[in-house]
Length: 353
Image 1 (tube, rainbow, N blue to C red):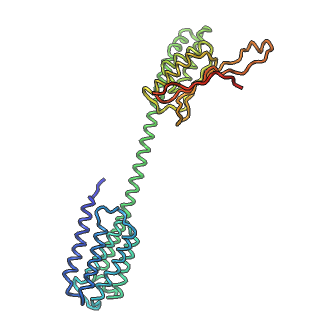
Image 2 (image 1 turned 90 degrees about the vertical axis):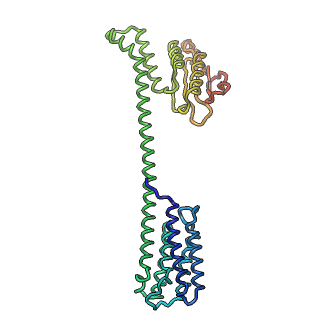
Image 3 (image 1 turned 45 degrees about the vertical axis):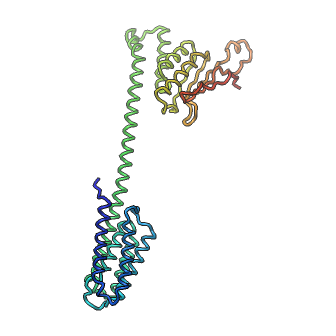
């Protein structure tokens, strides 16, 4: 993006304004009394300095815009009261026309277009009343109006360009985020696919070798592999080598294991994640529950993973006609997110009612 230093623009505007002041001082002998012209010079200089102050914001304050309009009303009245409007040429004594145009151009550039047009409108009306409509061109009033028009047009064009640039920047960031998300999904699919192939390839080769004629033990092993593949899809970040080993061990002893990763630990990585997963693996190794459920906690909570182990009632009691007890909670474990946590908060085994 091409930009112009603000100091350069302020310096050029200050030079133009100083030039008008020099012309005003040079023509002080033309008015009937120099006092009103001196007052007009002071007002114009004060308004110009305030409008071109280096530390001022890009958008002019409202009070300063009204002050500039007031100056643009007062200066023609002060200077014109000491000049003869019927004279064809007052020389440089009509310096205020260009001065008002310059001040209103600065006002328009600093995003106060309405006030700038009010100031130029008063200059046009004053000139028509004071010297006639035919003097608008000869005194340079039309040129001052053109300056303001150009300044307003440029200010609006630059503002629109700024808005478009922000919109394009936002669109670019959204496109970058979308691309990053797609790449992350692709990487995740590749990782899961590689893990699935690693798990299932030996059994698939065995099925091909045996031409589908598998023993009961081999069929049971296929079901274990199917559950392991399902874990890779639903468990996602809840899995490391230790967790996979304990999940398989629990299933081989007849337990039902469910792993659910709902995104609650996506922000964990490195040591934090390993501590959580190793704690999960230790908890699964220590329980004899027939049903084990591990799922990530909701975002924003201090818990990373909640583990529940449930023992089902003995079916032999129902076969003997006895009333079956309710399911019993063998394990309740909340694994904290922080690495420095002293341990997971676990409740005592309780009855489910």
